[in-house]
Length: 137
Image (cartoon, helix red, strand yellow):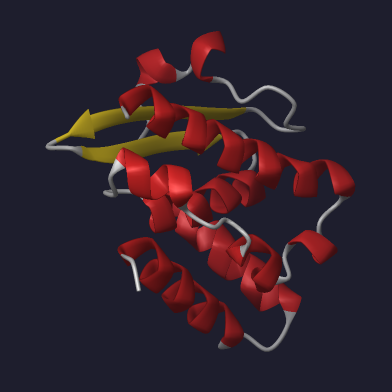
């Protein structure tokens, strides 16, 4: 099992601990609140994920062969959603990110409880993170 697979499993197990969707959303929002700060200079058009209902900025760097992501949003739930991806993909190699199966998001059940525009944002976030990893490959 890869590092990404292990992180996905751990995240799914943590979400299963919560009995209702309110608690799950609070958990996701909490993940967003714990994200490392996005440098102010990264809050520009070049780092904005286009197509999201809320503003979401994503930046990445490669250090010692591993990709590190930084993100922020003007919406707490959206920031939490991108934090899900960061928790799973951060500190992995570009190749591991590019080949990662991102269907774990379906297994969280979050998509069914989001407005269609927010659910679409999950796909956009995953795509952007893979594109950043491709640039480092």
